[in-house]
Length: 250
Image (cartoon, rainbow, N blue to C red; front, side, top):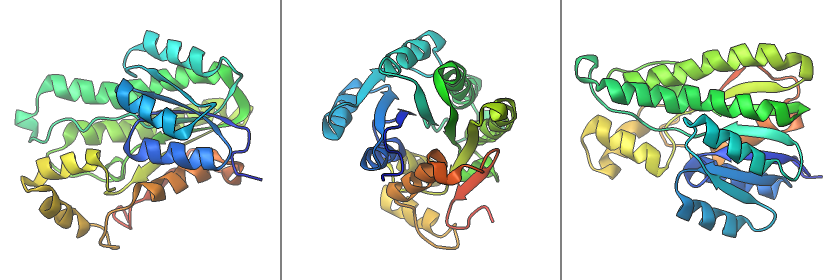
């Protein structure tokens, strides 16, 4: 039997990168996937690739009404089993004195308020025994200078996770954060180039040297960890920060 056989899943930031890689893996494991994102063209392409009965909705996770509408569409066919809250932005790369306040606010809104909105509206339509996985980052466990918005947001997701995991434990719903290290995605490329001021290949080489394994993760490796947290195999795992980072946080 497939590890998510017959389960209904919702993935935010599902049109590319880790979100799309996870959608592919969930579908391969028997799940019905509903994608939420901002780029309708990419969402359409993703759903066309995944095939029936998968669907999508365009929604900004900071917009609570849009989130509520997306969740209603996602659960028209029945309750939800898994939420993978994965939407994110990088924010700015700047020292605290030069960091734009509006960018700081927006970065926290996408990561923390966005995850809050998704969880708030998914929980009433989630089956008992379900799973919520929030994509944080290795920098949600450690910190670097110049990324205060992103790092504060990623730490904030951990606090949100721990509070909600305690609250929903009587329903046997598990809530965990996933902490990828450098991963080969366009999103990561942008962060690395902004942080180093180098072209993509040179910037990637700098980040390859950070984790003890001396390489980037492939998005499929992060998807495998998301699958574990989503599946019944992690049935006794909650309030946990799972680092998939090549040893960087250790």
